[in-house]
Length: 457
Image (cartoon, rainbow, N blue to C red; front, side):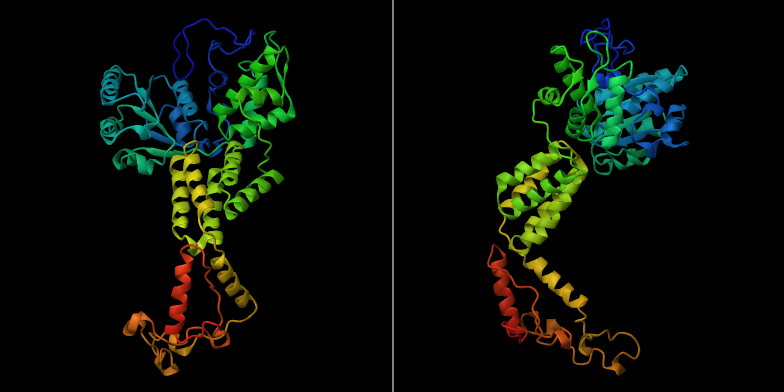
């Protein structure tokens, strides 16, 4: 039996659970393939791409153009290609950048040119286009520029970094958004009620317990393919026990992992992220990784996790290990570039760095103390010698008079008053003796001496 990207099979339809699947001749195909939308109206999510006159509407109307579909796994990139292939009377070709090389691309483009001469266009779908080398992408350029093919290229990586500029500039970039829990709930309901969906061996529809429904949505993590795969396997577990109701235990068995009791919009969301932060603050790397994994498996937005790591790097580590902030910022950028599931590795990298780093909250204590003074009205006038003296008349007001240029003094430090009179001598930043901040403490002491400031003030 052979099966293409869209579930076209040569074998006779057969219901995996022993019943009639009503799947339009795709009995051997996975549930995610059987339920793949046939029209734009059946697509779940991505409403921002489906307005009248949108590129997708024009594509399905037969207007030649090339598009890049950028988004995380399981949000509808292949579905859109499938819908276009059904809507237009063109030859449809699918290549995977994982397996296809320059030879295969050239061969398909040659065939497309011959077909176009006969009056028939070609839709070329390339999955994981970011895996194509520059030379492979160069091969596509003339075909896109001359509209030899309608190119639909899918990628989970930011095309601005993974696709050559000439190819990207000649195409439209459509960004697909992660599916929400409500979107996934629509897919689950469709799987239970649609004629192409799940049926018991006796041909009856399955029912789904509320806790099982919550589990399968949470475990899917915004991935449509994953939610339908989990549901199909859970139905198989229930059918093997002659049950028509799918329970939480069936979901757990089907995915071979504990169903994570984690409501992203409820108390568990806040409890788990709190435990994650406090474990890193407490330098327990094992607990930190546990809570990270718990959030990822529950489908937490990895960008949210990355943002919390950046905050922790300054709030709880600060100058004790200043490079950790750079690690966390890089992790956040990497998450945006590569998406899940690979982003879990980068997030783990940053989590380990945060948990094992020496800790200091001196930075947050310093800025909070300074803000508290401002809010309490302790502002004071800027000392005259520090005021702007560049505009006409400023010198006559005494602005800049007596200012000492730091670079004219030994060590590049000029001993003069910098704080307003009302705050002269106040101290905000008090370094700890932890990690690299111990060196900062010594530096502050030396600078206090050079500035003529009493370190005990």
